[in-house]
Image (cartoon, rainbow, N blue to C red; front, side):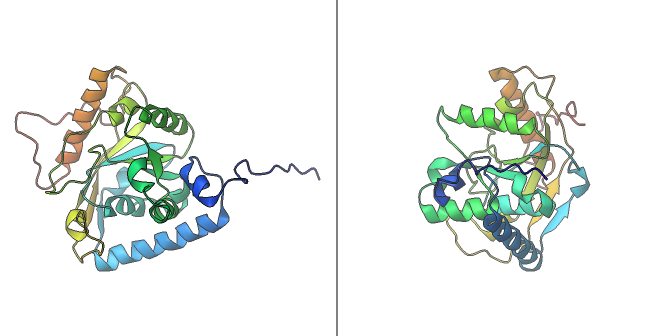
Length: 252
């Protein structure tokens, strides 16, 4: 029998350096730890926060896609991950700001091991991350979790969606699924460290694409506006102004 043997390309790097890269090479210990922690988190969310998922059937069953949601808490990413099959954990990447999550090694290790975060730069270098995301979406079974507001909301209101997600999706056939998270901001508000036993609900909308939108700044802004409308439409509060109708043009 012929054997092909090759040394892992990042074998000479430290664990911290390997965690900063994406896509990360297979690491059985990290994978095992992530799986065990994910199961524990799902049990805790269900029992402690009465976690409820509405519209799970809207999640694509195969291929790559993007989840977009409002952002009010560090619990948002783990709640979205809890809606995915366990087999998808190692190919699901919440996008996170490099300057915040690389502030210290412990924060970096916890977030990359537990949530498999993909780090991006908020400055001009962020375009490199967008290109990497597009390359990974063109391959099968990669999932990105994006919070387009860019920061956690303090009062629960959904802010303006930044154009990065629009630049990623405009003019492409990549599927994007709008989601609305309710209760995470009350369960773990900004500045808090210990979660409260508040109920959390995730509402998942229908997937859509933006292949008919121009790959321009104006097209990106149009994508952002439509995605924000779709997320708002899933909320019980629905803070969308009455003069701004919900677009159904992109539902698939």
